[in-house]
Image (cartoon, rainbow, N blue to C red; front, side):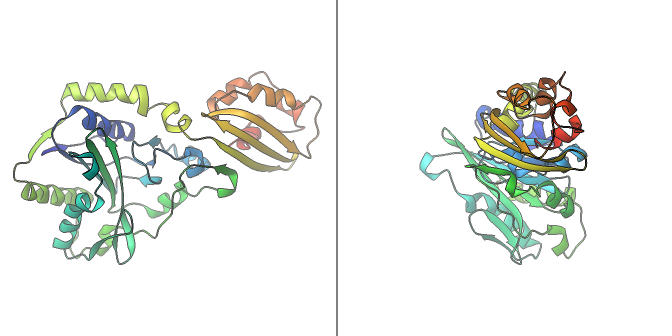
Length: 327
């Protein structure tokens, strides 16, 4: 086994690194890594239905789609991520207990009553501190999990606090759980970096043939290319979402009430209808026609509406208010 030391905290780079190691390394691998504040969504999820768009935009939080299924999670520097990549027989690759066992061993050595519970969670006192997911590629499996050590729980809840009434789709929804930080249960004080070193020491002890290494400059260059072509793109992080309908009611002081109904397919607005008790001078169908076929993304919509005087279609409505109705 090769243990790859990771130092980068950029979420786009870190998610791309997992795919790169999965598909380009032959050896079994283990990695520990942290992300700066971000939201990581499961492969099969509708991104916009999982995030608090206003909070994410205000805080400038990156949103990145991962290779594996499962639910959306918030990462910050108080959260430690671990990754196993192993080769084997296809029918035996999926094994959540096997890959979480080393983590449980570390925590139990530290005197914590940590357990594997449910489908893919690790808990202390019934509260979740680790969610896990897996992705199979050919004869290799990527298993990764979160380890909440000293995360800011308020940020976690706000970033993922989405209004469920906005969306109707067939995507896999995240299930929110009662969560806890590992640090709250420790008898000895330590920070997340020291905790990471404890895990690395245990891995070296558990796998005597393990060697510790780092990514080469060539590795990093190829990972950067993967970020540019995939993990850093709107097409992967948002456009990959399954078809969905979006509905939002916007109430304004001067323009009245507007209801936005969108049918989105392959990330593009397939159909849009705007209802309400607003007054207008020009027909709002012109706005609807301009947005049909446009990706459900703020930048693209703003570009499509360039040249339109919004208050001619919705009396006293600003373009900023109109945009709020679409997300």
